Image 1 (cartoon, rainbow, N blue to C red):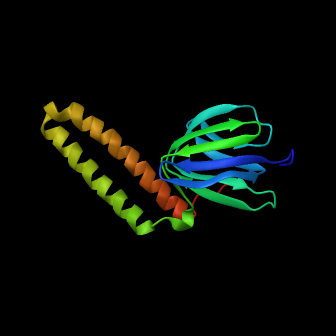
Image 2 (tube, one colour):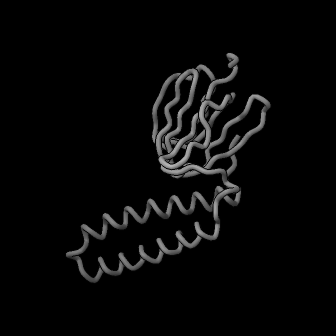
Image 3 (spheres, rainbow, N blue to C red):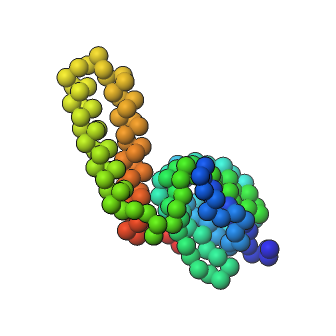
Length: 153
């Protein structure tokens, strides 16, 4: 590995997308905003928002990877991404993502009506609403990733 590269590992509970891939740059969207890591970067750990992350290979090719959420550890010689799920945008089933988005929107509307009609269910309903909002964010990010509406690099 040259001084101008470092390694990238992207894994999820059910998939090892790649391990120790040599790269020259990595970028993603963390909870504090977008970041780009380069070889020798100062160490940090952050959570990831759903969306595309990107990496640049030593041959200057840029590829994107969809991550649903998770954490990234940046060290001077490596970046490790531990995602809830990860896949290349061209592997995303857009129709399935759109169905999941519609289902979550419908359920969210039903919950809001239920809470308005029965205030005693408010606490449980609000917890379910927060879970649905996470699903909505993930499904929308998958749709955008698959359709190429968010580009990095």
